Amino acid sequence: MAKAKAKKAVQHLIRLGSRSLAIVLPPSIVRSLGWKQRQRVVAKRVARGILIKDAKTKRRKK
Figure 1 (tube, rainbow, N blue to C red):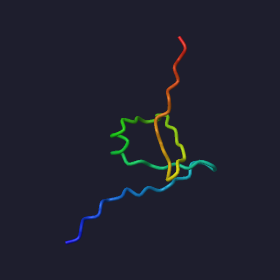
Figure 2: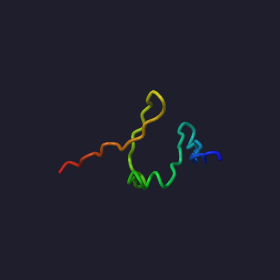
Figure 3: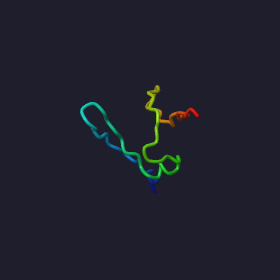
Figure 4: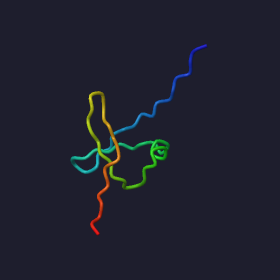
């Protein structure tokens, strides 16, 4: 009997305007990271792909 293959979540790039692209992340991944709508993130190119992580939040002056 053959091993069951793991399901891969293949995503597509979406064009936003004339210069920007977006990727839709599966809701399960977003929930597990605790991310919210309109959260700021940083995308950085690394040797074998892209690293996406939380952006440092700006602190308001009092």
